[in-house]
Amino acid sequence: MKLSELMENPILLYSYIDVEPEYLQRPDRELIEKVYLPAAVSLVCDETGMKKEELDRHDDLTVAVMAAVRDMYDNRGMTTAGKQDNSKVVESISGHHRYNLV
Image 1 (cartoon, rainbow, N blue to C red):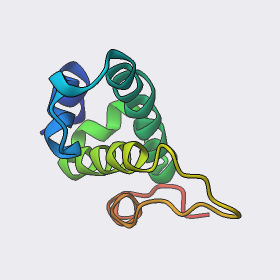
Image 2 (spheres, rainbow, N blue to C red):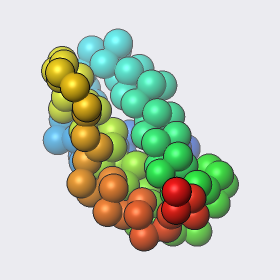
Image 3 (tube, rainbow, N blue to C red):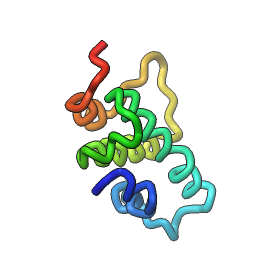
Image 4 (cartoon, rainbow, N blue to C red):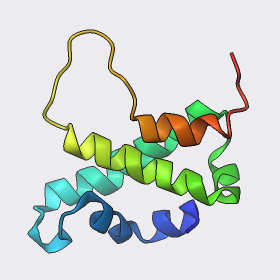
């Protein structure tokens, strides 16, 4: 699946998050679709050095975005002291496509 397909139909995220959309309150759905999804795309863009439009060339980057959204949703109530680590799935997939090697 291409990232653009996921962006057009964010309902596809819910099976990956393991939650049925009809059981979510509207604020939670909006949080996932309007905050976490765009933030996950930005994260993967930052990790790879690619523009959003370039992510569609690599289907595995859609998985990285979905993993980032799930990680954000699963950890939405947690706070950490010190450095927060990115998901290993996101880092691994994004690392294969990284342009900025600094």
